Length: 400
Image 1: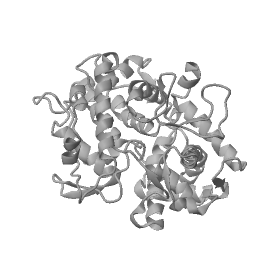
Image 2: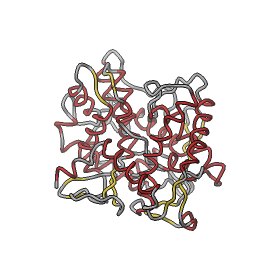
Image 3: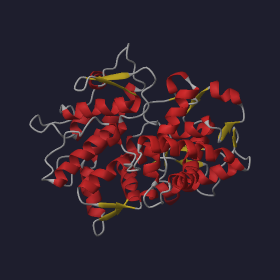
Image 4: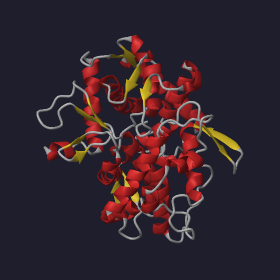
């Protein structure tokens, strides 16, 4: 049982079952959905158009949390690459875990720039400013760090203040975010072997583990995700735990059949993969070459998924489902998210052809950034006031 379940804790399993579910849907065997692959060319064309507009020279960075920060976040002296990498991991990990959908009405007013930010960008800037102010550090003399003990004791009120949330500026899932961060703190303190190899317990301790796992200075991107799933698995509340193994962003769908303990399970690991992408640059800056970037998958979230729904690649069998409220665990939503991963794989060669670039120079991490995420946001704004997702999904602030 344990072996079958452990096999779900990697990007290859996400990709395999996503493509399996898409194939079943194409064959008409997934309730709630029909698939029109003829519309995939239109999705690729919009993605290529958005990419050209945003990056005319096609010098596209990876899809990562760093794109949402304002300017260069404050980090320790680059003369100590390991210390700087730990701090960068600290910031990226906390910021990504606070990144789930903010809702349509929340805004962050950045006093330093005078600018207003919403949604993911706002969450990024708010967490950046908290980090730079030392809100997560246990040492006033060293503000640019995140300590496990501080996270374990984080009060919701600290996020209310740091994110400027309140009745007139509501932030979705605020209590869930704070609870997630506290569980992260508890996990950091409980596993010094993962988080405190070279310093006090902190999220950035994972840098030292990955640096030790790099062979010849090279590290496959998928290895980042595997460590994250091992290190962070127990922090997710109200998720599947089978045979003592926390499965994280993994859900049930009746179309996926196996003759072992993984029967009916669909792993997605969206937030963890988003975090894995966000740790590539700190590793590279520290001198570790991250290879096989496409060992990770596309992200099963509402911008990429919304692109395929809004452009007509994925169609609801019952249009009334668009007006209903759904749980993340509903098979309809599980199938949508999984098919999004598979469709991103299928769309990538089309986008590369339109842009005239090769796979080596244009991995998924660049298409997502260029890209599909922005195309999903654009078409959502055209389809719906406020540009929200195509469905109303109950969120605890830790999935999307």
